[in-house]
Amino acid sequence: MNLFINTNLSIPYKEFRWRFSRSSGSGGQKVNKTSSKVEIIFDIKNSKFLNDFQKIKLRNNLNKKLVNDCISIVVQDQRTQGYNRQLALKRMAKLIKESLNKKQIFRIKTKPSRSAQNKRIEEKKKRSELKNNRRFRYFE
Image (cartoon, rainbow, N blue to C red):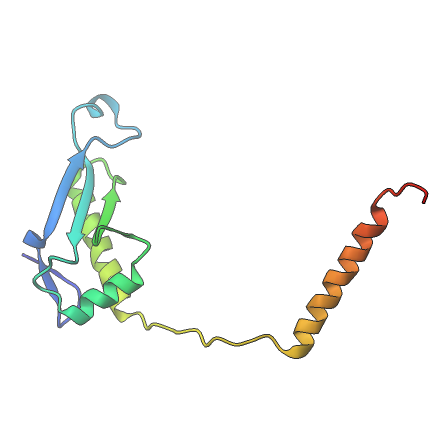
């Protein structure tokens, strides 16, 4: 079985690592017995089904969500492991698809205009003068 990202890309399930544990929250009498919390981990660096361009794009777009070049998604919304597995796979597919389709926008560095610089300096002088006037001075 494969996880379909788009028409050109599908990732087989053997590329994912799964972890199961007891989820927090309500669950009644079965709460201490079942491991319904699901964590799915996808290693971008060691993936054989992503090309170099896709790996770089994923790293750039998901850099805050990556830990050791791995995407990790934790789901504990439902009470059964099966539903949580399905949700985790859907979220993983959505995350990868959005990050691969995302266009990177580069910021063009600009300098503040001369008038903006002067205005900033004038504001600083006014603020400095205001604070200077608040200071207690002995009679000289």
